[in-house]
Length: 544
Image: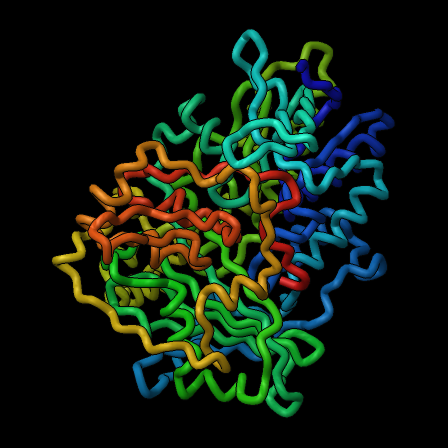
């Protein structure tokens, strides 16, 4: 059956801060110029914000550029960031350190990024943007000349084997003069575009982290709105990059989370269990006494910085936001950078579409980026994340020199040398880690936390986690690395079964998947490919 299609000037894939900022900017520019421009935005989550997960403390500079009267329009920025606290943890104690200047949060706001995106969605729709939540862009479409033509949404109503059921509905094609990909970290279509157009040529390998987060309601006497706490050190060893965040929102809510760099070496490590262990520290656990966990989620984040940015344009489209990797790692912030990248891209695309004979590629976008504060911001912090390849203490010392002496303008650039999937050492060479059993009060097992992510996939839909070679999980991953997918996945998706009977095999519990993309990044042989499930599936984060 031939798929139906709809045509637009611009199609945007992804309803996060970048995609929504681009949509708003395009409509603003059209109104200013007295032109009509049709903009469609696809979001794979069941609603805008359903798949959005971040700390989050946001800077408002990009927002003010986009919507100067955001306060009057009711943007949900309700908790100004107050006191900053930065600590180094040992197993039983804590040392307060000077807060690095990049982490100062005066003038910033602690927010639910999901609620912020819902508000951005309302602003976009008010300007005439067509938003379609619950529709996952599953395929990139190409013109005969090889340029991007648009995207197609996935079929609905296929069974586990990919056969059509009675409820089958074919996907829809969306054609556009320009397609903006704003899929977030490790976008599945972005990954294909990078391979087709060699977008990573000349860039460092991207390096990633996994961020795991819980939202708690705490006792009023323990709640201090605006308090911002970050830690480094325990429970991680000094060779592993990572740390924690804890932010006090409004309504007696506290977000607590943990980030682990996915360039870690020990296959026995479980980022999820490191997070649970972190909460038991004497300097941390008291905040949650008598409280209750109300939500959970996890998401990968791109940490490579400026030197890992791919080529941002290709015939028919551009990359924006964290799908390209605009996160400012030392600031632990990416919302303002994602939005600014989107606004720069939108300006370039709008100018392009206004030409009598538009070129296929919006080459003005990277040129605008190089002239913007965004490029300067990322340039001045470019050496900090790669310095952590030397270990925690050398990196802290170097970062101080780079920040205070060179002001981020050292006459050299440090580099990321290998992708994260190549950093694991054989399990036989690394120490095993014995994690404490969850108590069900402060610490929790993976499956009970997945319940608090409201994750749902139709039980008989095709498995969206694909193995290139079904033999690799046992012959390689289990044999060499003790099946690390069982530990790096924060949702209990991967499980080795049958070992007692001598016939081990990998069982994929795809219905648990919270769409963090860690498996697609960290699998040692890149044997696992994350693809989009049916639209509307996955987590349904209420306030993350």
